[in-house]
Each structure stands twice: as structure tokens, then as C-alpha cells.
Amino acid sequence: MPSNTALTDNDGHFRRKESQFRNAISKGGRHPPEKDRYVLYLNYGCPWAHRTNIVRSLKGLDHVIQLIVMGIDLGPDGWLFDGKYGSEAVDPLYGVKSTRELYQRADPTYTGKYTVPCLWDKKLETVVNNESSEIIRMFYREFDEFLPEDRRESSSPLLPQDLRHEIEAMNEWVYDTVNNGVYKCGFTTSQEAYDKHIYRLFDSLDRIEEHLGQPGHGPLLFGDHVTEADIRLAGQHTSMEGD
Image 1 (cartoon, one colour):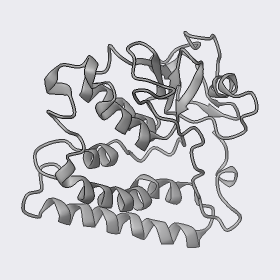
Image 2 (cartoon, helix red, strand yellow; image 1 turned 120 degrees about the vertical axis):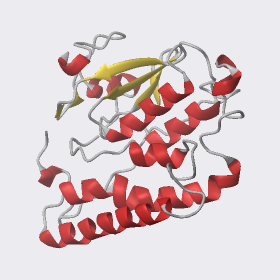
Image 3 (cartoon, helix red, strand yellow; image 1 turned 135 degrees about the vertical axis):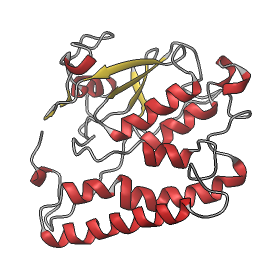
Image 4 (cartoon, helix red, strand yellow; image 1 turned 90 degrees about the horizontal axis):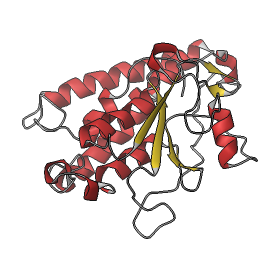
């Protein structure tokens, strides 16, 4: 795993870099929804990848989108295929051993981070998207034609339209202070930065507890039905393995 100093800025604060592959699966687009065309690369130690795996399972997309699991060891070449903890010993599609090789197969000039989750298009042999918040929304409805009625977004929405504004407002502060907040605490290299973010993290945990106690909330964040807010919060744990 890289040292903390490789992940923080000069002032000791951790600042996450933007994902670079931001294409979408959509009908009529470059990446149309098709069965067996796409692969979700992830590992079980990354919380950002974990949320995409949750949605894939909740939606019943196991027979539509292939899952390839990498190991949880992180090095200069990104995540590795090492056969540990139920992961693949080598990429079953191309025989590569790291996310770096996979990303450079998509774009030989790529110089960004070699992250998971990674949604891969087997037909075009490229990364569709590596931003977890966008991948899960593609999974909500873009593959509904391959699913039974009770698994479709129209019947069992993970992002109900009447709650969308409230969920997106919660997502914004939960991302900043909880999802990304644990990284800001764990990867900091200055006491000032740590103090700033650890108090914000615990203030947000108190805010979540208060929210759950309000009428109409609980046992889940917006009642008794799983929504995107629950997935984005519960899909995050305090692993500091990076992404």
C-alpha cells in the first residue's frame, strides 16, 4: 500500500481526485444496455466498489453483468489479481495481473489512478465508467428489460422520485463528511487536518442518528424501503485500503 504522503497534498490534507472515465450506458448511445456485454471489476476491500456490488445484487443483475473480483493488495500498478480471499489469480478476460494493465488496454496514454469499481465494455474493450455513484444509477434502470417486473426501478425504486431531492441533499454531506471523511481522517499527515475532519465525521454520525429518529424515518434512512441513501451510507465502511 502506498504511504500516506503519496495520497495527501502538501498541507497534510487528503483530497480525492476526480474519476476520469465518465461515459454512460444508455439506449442509442455508444454503450447500449446488452446482456453479457459488461463486466464489473471490483475487490471486496474497497467501499466504493462495495456499493456497486450491493446494487448489482439487489437488482438481480448477476446474470446480466459479469463480476470479476480482484485481490485487496494495492501497489503502484493499482489493484492486483493475486488469487487471495476468493479473488481471481489472473484476469479471466485478458490475462492481465493489475488494474494498470486493464486501464492501459482501454487507453495506452492513461496516466490517472487505477481504481475500482471499473465498469468495462467487452465489445469495445474499454472502461465505460469508474465513478461508483454513476455506475449504481446505471444499474437502477438501464438493464430493466432483462429483469422481472418486481426488480425494475418502476416497481421497486432505489431512487424514488418523490424523495430524490432529500436523498441527493443527504448524499452530498454524507459523501463529504462520512464516505470521503474516513479517508480525510485516515490519510491525513497533519494534526490540524485530522482534527478538522474527525469532528466533522462524528458530527455527521450524530446527524444521521437524529434523522433516523424523525417521523417517517427508520429503520432505514427513508422508512422501511432501501434507497440510494442507504446504499451510499451502508456501502461505506472504515477500511483505509484506498480505491
